[in-house]
Image 1 (cartoon, rainbow, N blue to C red):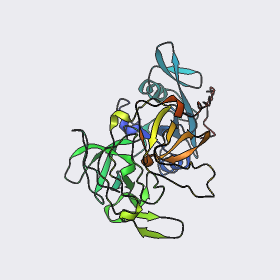
Image 2: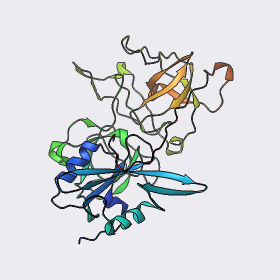
Image 3: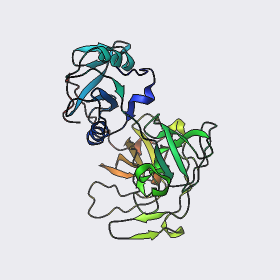
Image 4: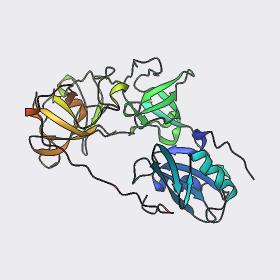
Length: 318
């Protein structure tokens, strides 16, 4: 039987991944018992254990639950203190037709710089637009660890890079990890501002591509990791006006000095909030957080959506 190091999280954890992509990776493996662990697409914080069986890939939901002050991981009716112990258990016990034998092979993932990133922390990896980087570890949704061609390693902001087609230097194309919304508004990786962006980037729509110049809202935005975990809801002041597309009924119209209640920050840079009694989305580049806000300008409180976590043995909806 193959052996693997359960403590080497990077070998078996594949991060954010669709069910289809996981199936494709595992079906390319010959052996039964080859597996990977990915993030659940339906319940934040949960995981999915994907296993190559005889002629199929099975997906098992792993619920992350808290009992008093302790975290446990539940799969079926089994409870474990951590993921390595869960994986160790299933190297000795069958899930369906096979125990776990080894993690799926990982191809080196390469990304290309979409914008210049100068970095501000000693752990950052500065890079230029067009520079090729190899992803080493996906630490967070918006910050990954990567290596440049000189062998230097550090953290990079995810929305500042794009995937390379076929993971080869010669086939790097515009395949964004996060989208660009509104001409000239690069979607950065956090709530506050960090390093200058290039003035000229390619702005794409369904029908046209045009080079953005100074007339297309140059932004000198940089980002701080300290604001990544800002408690929401929080208030932000509009620093750039925006008139949304008339066909987009969920976009908010922004006027300079409006105060907007930010209720959700998304990795694609389209944040959600409330303004003048209307809920909708807007580009994060148009606002800046304020520490103190006159409550007279604050919109009504937002509502929260509760998700019920059920104990289920298979992740059919993922």
